[in-house]
Length: 634
Ligand SMILES: NC(=O)C1=CN([C@@H]2O[C@H](COP(=O)(O)OP(=O)(O)OC[C@H]3O[C@@H](n4cnc5c(N)ncnc54)[C@H](O)[C@@H]3O)[C@@H](O)[C@H]2O)C=CC1
Ligand SMILES: O=C(O)CCC(=O)C(=O)O
Image (cartoon, rainbow, N blue to C red; front, side, top):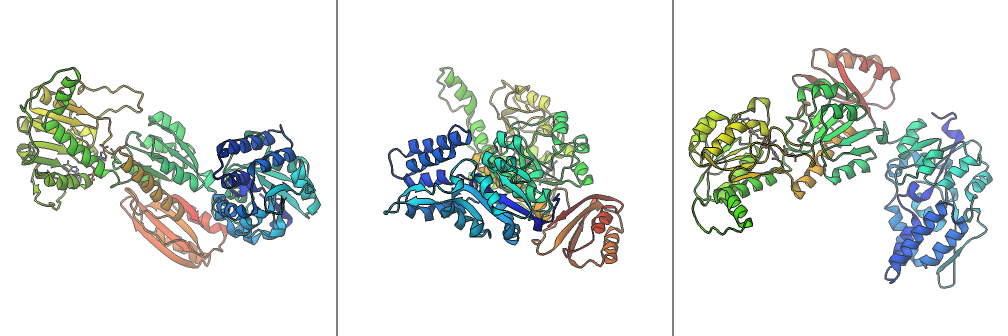
């Protein structure tokens, strides 16, 4: 917390890699050296000199001299530099423009860079030109940048403390920067605190020396209890992404300023318990089980994103009881599964797998025996949801007769025929493909009895969930020739990572295509999911919206404007809304908007209120019996 009021505190901010994400002279080099044959070499040299300067191997003046010589820059190139840098302002600075504008009298940019580009870039966030302390270029008559003003203390080592002292600021000085020269201000006594800014670059030597680390400006503002755009700094919110989710998801969370940890494989229950303790947002795919036991240790968990369709790996009831909202991607990979199913059906009905295998052994067996077209064959779909329906459309386009069975009464698309019972579907189909969801009741949905009902020589596919098929029964049916072609993508036990061996009785059986749960693993599907799920999670975190949640009452909320948003999750018992509104009435709170939605387990109440209210309001809302979780957003 600030020991002095903001009026008595001055904020000194570094420019390169702090206010902006980049080092300006590197960017200038990319512009000024365009078309030069030695461009790459010169850019590398510039970077090396910068690093040597930072490591103390060169004096700052020397490093500047050398870099300017290599840059061979011209005054006319500065507008392009300014434009590029303006697009590279650090995210947390952009988010907190209001703070910067409101406190402009107390903010100084102190940099070893150059005023010519710093002033216009920082002006866009309200920083005053006379509060920018930096070097200036010297040009020749033709406008070439040939030198720098050597009388400026910032062109030499130790310049920053010197210029800050010369300002004679009447109050405490807090420095925010990424470099050693920023720490030197504090070391020299010219500042009371140094915050190592690590949003763009983390220099261990600097972090080690800092009084505090600020992964973002939000963190600095939160730490000092100053006005900010985020009620709680995102850098304090930990996101754990498992099972190799697409990099675009990582990028989306990082852009928002979250603290993101990624792991390639799935975690077992004990590993997840260990990893989840301080996690607020968890991202998984199909192999990580989020059990009630895991949730007991997940005190900070707000939301889980299943980067896939199936959510049977998540104990949804336990999540709801604990106020954890779960989201998935119900459509993003459906097309990929459909394409794989169609491909496999054709390969299996033609017996391509054994033919290809014998070719690899050098055998040439050109024959039409047991090879068929799909046209006119009866395809039976068990489960007529998002995948089943798409598959029916594509299969009909190939001339197949499609039948389906679903426990819910579904509209038949095209010429598809609805079967009244599973038995009816099993008996009529030449090819059977499973597309039910993974609910527990579907365990061993297809077993000995069901294989017995199928036609002799049926083709059988399971690309849905492993536990839906009794594997020994399937193995039997294959061995007895009942099933003559099989495609299986999902298994009751799947390896957690690519390093584990796949164990199954289905290995080494004839005309069986085994795939490692990759029905939805295409570049397109994974990129779609990588964008879709974070968007849902961010809407929930930033706005409270639960639209598309698989376990929470769905609320699509308006954007928050000039209000504070109070989010109250409670067990669905009578009287909670009345108790909340009594508290609002007691404290004369002006309500801007209120939204309530319940499901069997919980109620979710969002109240937008005027920004000024007593601290006790939040405490009393949290204290209502049966409250599960409370959050405040602004
Ligand atoms: N192999 C892979 O990589 C992928 C697998 N999947 C899995 O595919 C399956 C289907 O996905 P979607 O079509 O998106 O799901 P969905 O939820 O849209 O459709 C499932 C359908 O199955 C029906 N159903 C449930 N139990 C049934 C039963 N016992 N008998 C008949 N119908 C039943 C439901 O009423 C629903 O219409 C899911 O299990 C999903 O997890 C999804 C994507 C990728
Ligand atoms: O890609 C994955 O990890 C799982 C795909 C899947 O089974 C699903 O989307 O339900």
